[in-house]
Image (cartoon, helix red, strand yellow):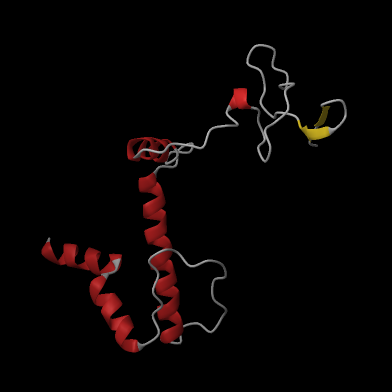
Length: 139
């Protein structure tokens, strides 16, 4: 629930600053700036970084969330694209007739619709079983 403050003798109604005090732990008592959630003391006047270095620093900080990093995100993205391609191949080869995955398509996904595209995918992406059989043949 948003707390409102009445200022200027009841003429102005505004939101209360959402920031919490480090010292007391309570919510700030000042009014938030117009179209902002915090007062000027807690960063309401900030417009974010302007230089390339500042934007890169902020971007780097936001790339790690918990245990997830940019590398983990790109690996998951690549696996999602691969799964979508395998689903397309199953439909082209009439292995399945069920529905397809719903939702947003992963970045880099290009649908496979023809048998020629299936052949090209198989040539570009050898399956794990093919790799394992080649390794066994070498031994």
